[in-house]
Image (cartoon, rainbow, N blue to C red; front, side, top):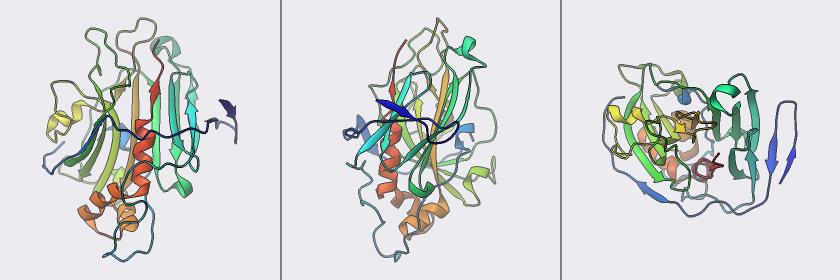
Length: 279
């Protein structure tokens, strides 16, 4: 693996390999409604206009499965995290500092993975200190897809926060009374959010009630004896406008149909490709 620099402050690692094709425990789920924003939702929306007729199927592969095209990889500055992403994507280091290195054991780093022309994006924020999930939250319309990621290590220290199994979760959020105009929705009424989070064994990954918001970050195994371990925020999102442009459909129908596009398949593949080196 070699490291190259394209612009100042941008670091990428490239390796041609075979993308992750076998999901751990992936399933599409049915619709339920409840109420329940977390900082990881403040992301740029993504989608692509294709000029298709609304009566035609969504663009892309039509399956939502990860593509078999050549890939490259990015390894975080700490050497702890590695993600695999399509050769046509980019990985840009947006922020990096070691201010909390002595406290959490790894540097703070923000990396933006971006598809061609910014159509799809996925942002990772590693080396975050203890944090909470206060603040207004959007309405959880439905959890559209879940997949357990058993190969991702968890923090098994006694009393550790974020110590449950790691899951990939794609959720459909809507504006609600508690959060009527979420900035991340970019003017739309709906948002598709994908996340990689710890979910306690006693909780349902498909829950749409208040327990949904109990799972909002990935707890990295503790470094240097810190029982809590650094928090890692892992999230991507698709706005309603982007989904409608990509599928030629409207509203919830467009958001659900986006899961069948190649763009979503690539987004899911990046999120679930995460490898974590344990201390």
